Image 1 (cartoon, rainbow, N blue to C red):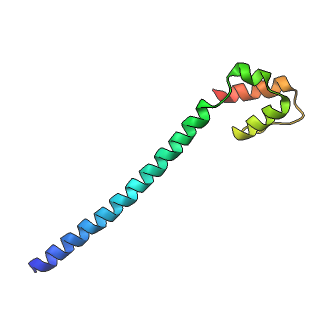
Image 2 (cartoon, helix red, strand yellow; image 1 turned 30 degrees about the vertical axis):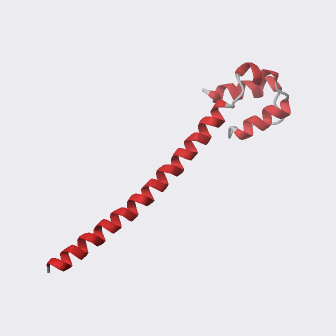
Image 3 (cartoon, rainbow, N blue to C red; image 1 turned 120 degrees about the vertical axis):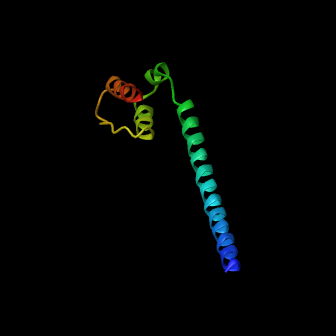
Length: 87
């Protein structure tokens, strides 16, 4: 009976070790995603730079930011929409 308990305990420890390594992998993936997001945010153009961009570049930026833009809008309206969604 003691052997069964020891084998069960060792099996349980192996299972926890497996789950622990799985958890570590998930944490590393999350850290990578956070780093990528921080880099993306750091590389966003300033409001002054946004105002200087062409309409085509503004539409591209809006797409990268996940902002749906009506391409028929004036450049000033697109800038306003981007800045409104920046906050």
